[in-house]
Image 1 (cartoon, rainbow, N blue to C red):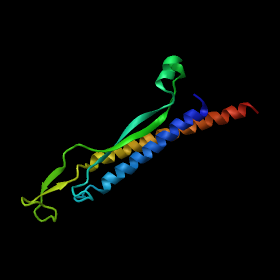
Image 2: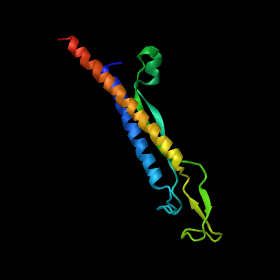
Image 3: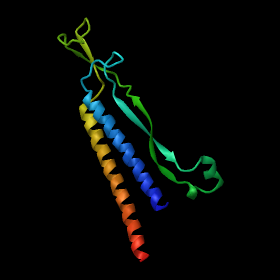
Image 4: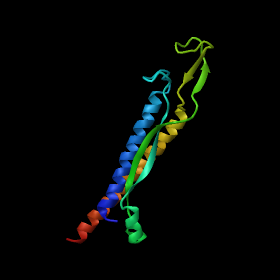
Length: 145
């Protein structure tokens, strides 16, 4: 793996984690949104990560496993979480049904904060890997002097 390839892998990781933090922030911001454009309560969004393939599978078979190199990570989809919505009894709420129940988003603030910490740590790990690759490149240039 070349220096630029390792930097590219870290850069794609940084981009993916930044988007993950944006989606988590959106989930937290809509924790009490009972009415969206579609009419129902907000539904939690989740990212699906996927490996960015550096080589096609046939090339991997033709050559060897050593020639296969990942070129990072990408977001394949942003989907709505399938967890059931929360139903609370609050007859004074403007969105309450005839029975007095209100449907709230399926967002758990504690879970979102844990996911935000995880995304932040992953982002930091990618920054560390990027800095290590940069440092190795700089040392290699110093050797050539």
